Amino acid sequence: MQSNGYKAVYKYAKVSPKKVMPVLSMMRKQKVDDAVKLLTFDATKASKMVLKTLKSALANARNRGMDENLIVVSATADTAPTVKRGRPGSRSHFSRLLKRSTHITVCVDKEGK
Image 1 (tube, helix red, strand yellow):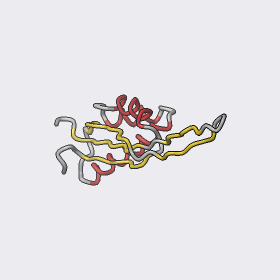
Image 2 (cartoon, one colour):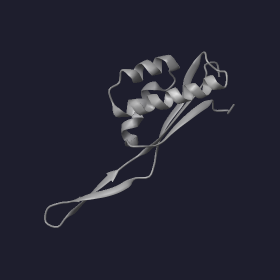
Image 3 (cartoon, rainbow, N blue to C red):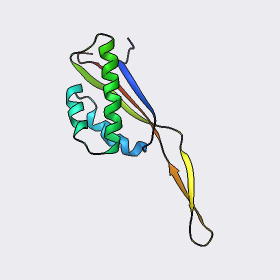
């Protein structure tokens, strides 16, 4: 077991970190069951990705024998490589489009720690 609990990482998620951060702050320090309920009824694209990551972290914990009294210890959204694209604008101008991506990390652990 790691000192930081059981974690799962969703790498190269096709959503901006700025859009993921409010979803993560909503579920931090929550019990896993409550966090799953929150994310299930949230309609954003980011919440679907975070839910997938949370379920993976929960499966990792269950695989190691931890099943009860789990909380979300930490949840972070780190910047991943940005794809740089563009489109033509008026008067020979080139507008730059930055398609950002994210590494989502969710860590769960026992409640008493």
